[in-house]
Length: 97
Image (cartoon, rainbow, N blue to C red; front, side):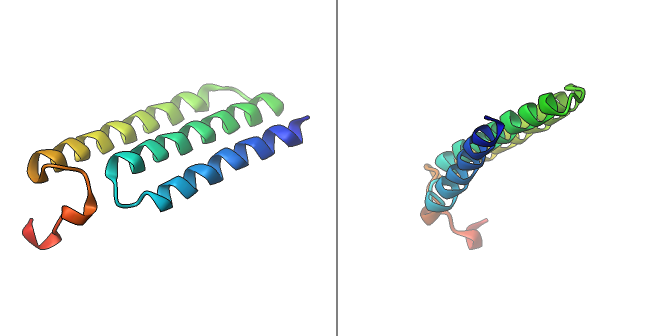
């Protein structure tokens, strides 16, 4: 039973990586796929910690850093939309900054 759950989380992680790579021109979809990867890793971490009877205190640190990552990504998204009008990387010129 545990083997199937591990395969499920590996599938979730790899599908999040695939979406991240395939939607690389759109910043909002990249941020959503990063959050999906973070959630899949969190769920896998919870299952592993429960299986080995460890403390779940480490998950609070993980969630704190993932919230900081999400807030940083959203602030970059808002800054990019304010300066360039959209969140497509094709309209973003690095020489303009």
